[in-house]
Length: 312
Image 1 (tube, rainbow, N blue to C red):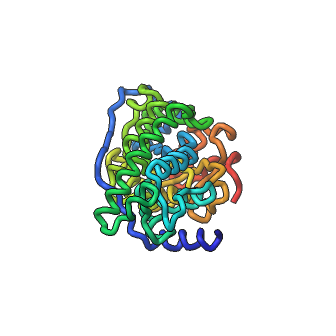
Image 2 (cartoon, rainbow, N blue to C red):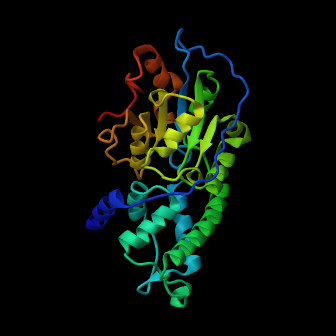
Image 3 (cartoon, one colour):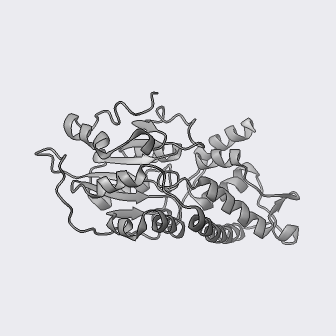
């Protein structure tokens, strides 16, 4: 298993992983009260950008269950064995490859080296790139429907994230957005259930996996967010939970705070350049002033979450 995981990590660095351009949903919120913490002369805006899966809500296990349910419905097999993603395997996959379709392409092309037959072997494995794409598209569509059902039943925001978002939404000097590699349908369902319509409508930008041609760990999604918001990347802070998210944020020239989950806790976040890491935001009482006040007072490279962050 260790050799398999090492192979996944090595291959991912070489794989060409592209998404498809699609939905982009910047929204306009009403004028907010002037920030009490903004220092005089610091008129340029800041931005706080949230990943969705693993940050706003701990969804990765729900994603895994939905994939496996779709695989089972399609009755996928490779060499007579059913296709199934274990918890340990998915932990590595989610920290290596961004986007659902990319995960499936990577699994079949790099991990197993073969696409599956379906209908219990009665329908042979695809033999052309077009047939491979069609199978993955259909699997992803069904997986998304199953995932949305699970979200409706089980969705709950991670402790502290809504409080932090509300503080940012109330600060006139900070723009707020969500940047997720997941599909439009999946993310909007999560945001509707966890944020509610009011918060979602107040976001300044919402960029999803359908909107960019390259997914995390490529920085394009965060570069695009900064451009849409008109905010210098050096004045943007990203809240992430995974190694690929940190690589994307730092590749875009942004600060990055990690709120890790049980499946990402052992990632070498500081080695990847993250500026601070904590478990649940709520467990450490992370507030807006711990992030932006040092940047306003001491400069854009100031230490973040001083006194509450995990050590290296």
